Image (cartoon, rainbow, N blue to C red):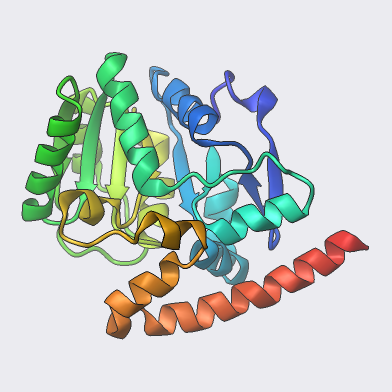
Length: 258
């Protein structure tokens, strides 16, 4: 699935047993954009944080989803810290919302186009307006707000045709984890554009949710900010997955030191 332009130089480091790409916004976004220019990308990218890796560690088929991705970029600072503790001092965070903007800029400058999948019609309208204001040369080939989907969506042939016929080469999927990753893995073999799960980036850029301040993000406390913003929805997720991630990380680092 990986583009030949990136595979030979791909560098990863395991984080709680899953390979996560090492790099920075510049080279990883460039790798993604290069794949997107293939006639049929058949590829997807996972934008990973502690929650996603913990789910993959605990669920075999979700682990396979991450293992089959063209890239697994480190969105969470705990992933980057782990990579650095293992000797990869050049590891940097590649934040999902920022990655989305970087790819939109590249698309606007290099004859690319995007497709937006997720959210609702109101969010998509606000999001598309924001992106076009930021990148006047950007072509939004299409957008679709799906009805409620199960956690593991089945193949939607009509939507595949719609996306492929749009001519888009980058597909942003904002369905939330793990639904968006399952969707990407299921549909990527039939898609022309490269699919990227970007989670809450749709809401952040549309302005329907407030993004954590840069300092909070750099300290690795984005999860706490979001928990305080949406305690009823997120308390169980962060209580269980963050605790499990710390436990798995300790085991991982002890094993690495041996």
